[in-house]
Amino acid sequence: MTLLNAQQVAYRYPQNNRGIDPISLSVQAGEVLLIRGPSGCGKSTLARCLTGFVPHLYVGELHGKVTVNGLNTAVTPLWQLSEEISLLFQNPTNQMLTDSVENEILFGLENMGLPRAAMQERLETVLAQFGLTQMRHREPLTLSGGEQQRLALAAVMARQPQVLVLDEPFSMLDTTASAQLVADLARLVEMGTAVILCEHRYEIVTDLPNLRELSLAGGATTHRNSQVEWSESRQEHLELTIEGLHVTLGQQKVLQNFSMAAQGGEIVALVGRNGWAKRRCCARWRECNDMKEM
Image (cartoon, rainbow, N blue to C red; front, top):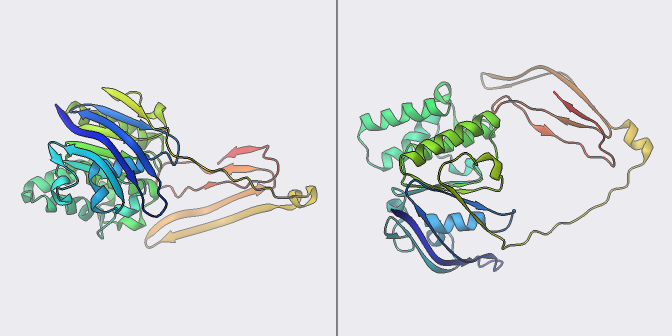
């Protein structure tokens, strides 16, 4: 059964006349379509077209036709489309609307008009699936980037859409969370959900069932090179030192007695699970010849 069909869909943004050239595709129930391509090739724009965000939220020049479960996305209201197809944004912060994790999940379910018992059951299920049970009363904006990504996924998947579109869903997830997402997507596919993944890292999703791919070659990325003059003496004296750092956000202890040092010409990577207050730190000098993991 074909759940989504796009016929010669093309779109141009009015501010720069950039967008996507005509694309045709269809996705069946229980199938995964991987849309690949470099940054700037139009993956996010195509996702907006498929879900009805274009033309309802984005003004521009749209050609072609998209239907989701028989509904024409150009003329069907977004509230009605949202019961058939859901989009996970690349930046999860853009999807945070409420004051707690559990309310973020319940918000979409309430809009669907589900009975209270059904909403509670779905809430508890996705909280457990995404490791959010202990965070249910936290404010979404106090979560780490990876935790926000998991919350956005939980809120979307709780709606159980027939078509699920994900735009760079692994961008903020660690290895464990990425593997869990792949498992969750596989379960949805087995249940008959059509999944469309806009993702350039093919190796992450190779185990998904019924997987096929579409490569976008359009768009262009401009690379600008800049050169900075560094003297040997200046490089030798560059240093970052942190000693006994403590950080607390509200009642949450984020860092305790954290110490580290980085010398000029060195890269230091801070690694750990999502929510462990890590940040990838990179100091680039003329030569990068050392690597540490802390």
